[in-house]
Length: 478
Image 1 (cartoon, rainbow, N blue to C red):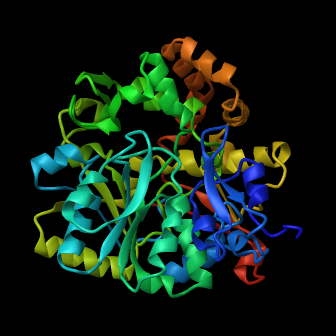
Image 2: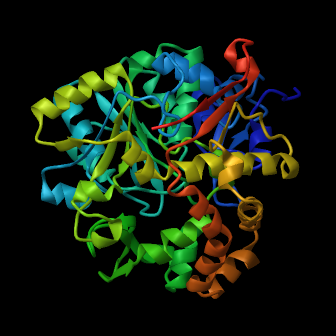
C-alpha cells in the first residue's frame, strides 16, 4: 500500500514537535516515537500496519493549527489581549510549604492544584512527566494518583517528550484526568478533541506550562562531556534546582559518588537555547499556552517580590508562579482551590505578566522564523496567524530585521548540524563563554527592540479562517 496521509513528511522535514499525539491516537498502533539523529523524538510509521486512515495528520499540531477556530471554540471569541490571549483573571502566587517550595520550580502552583484535585476527587489521576526511576536521564510520562507521584514530577525537564502517547491508556478508561503539558502537546489534544469530543469528558482540565522551547537530548551529553562525566555516573539531573542559590534556579548534577555539581544558569540554559533548542519550537508563537484552561510559569515581575528590578532579587527567594485563568471550568476549580487550601496568591496585572513572559520575543520571532523557513524548508505547513508590532516599521530599523533573520538562519543551521558528531564535539571543545557570546551577538539587537515593547501588537489571520470575511488586523493597546 502507498502511504500518503501520514505524518512521515513532517518528521522528514524536521518539523515535528515530538508531542506524540499521532502515536497516541493511531487506531492500529502503527506509529512509534523514536529518537532521531538530532536528538528529538519523531514518529516512525510502520507501513505494514498503517491503513492510511489519516488520523495522525488531522491531529498533528505541526500541521496547520487553526488559531481563530480554537480561540472561538475554547473561549468564544478572538483574544482582545493579543500578547497573552484570552483570560478571565491573572495572579501570582507561591505554595505555603517551604519544603515543597524548595523542591518545585517556581511557586509550586501545578503541584499544589493537582494534589488538591486528587484529594477532593475532582480527578482520578494527573498526567505528568518526571524522570524515570530506573533511568535518571530519561523523562517518562505517567498518570500520578497520589501526592508523592505528583511531587516526583515537579520541576522542568526541557526535553522533547512524546507525552500524548498516554492517550492510548486514558482513552480505555472512564476516569477523569488533569493534563499538564506544553503548548504543542495541548494543541495536539485540542485537535484530537475536535474529532473526538469524548476527550473533553476525560481530560477535564488542561494545565498549560509557559514554554519558550525544549532542548535536544544531545544537550545532556554536551553537559556531561564538558564535566568529563558518563551517563552511568548520574543519579539525578536537574535542569533547574533551588538547592544551591534558590530561584531562578541553577542546573544541578548529583553523582552516584555523592558529589554535587552546580552549574549557573547563565552558562547552562543560556547555552542550550542558542545551540540545542529544537527548530520547530522557534516556529511556535504560543509561549503563554493560550489554548489551555489555566496556564502558569515563572513569575518575573519584580514588584511581586517587593523589588524594583529582578537583579535586586539576586537569588534571595524561592520564586513565585504566574497564573492565568482562561476558561470558566478552570475558574470554578481555581476558586475552590483558593478557598480550601493555604496557597497564597495576589492579583496580577496582565501587562506585567506579558512583561514577565517576554511574549513579544516569541511571537515576533516565530513570524520571522516562519517567513524565512518558507525559503529553506520544503513542506512547511501554512501558518494560520502572524504577529507584528503596531507601527512596526517605526520601531524596527533595517539593521534589526537583518540581524533577526541572521539569528533565525543560524538557529536553523545549528539544529541540522546536531546530527553530526564532529559538530557536537566542536561545541564541547569551544569555551562555553565563546558560544554564549556568539549567540548573544546575533540576538541582542533583536531582543533590545522587542523587550519593553510588550504593549502593542497586531495579529493577522488568514481570510479563510474568518468565515470569508475581510482579513482581520487587531491592535493591542493596554
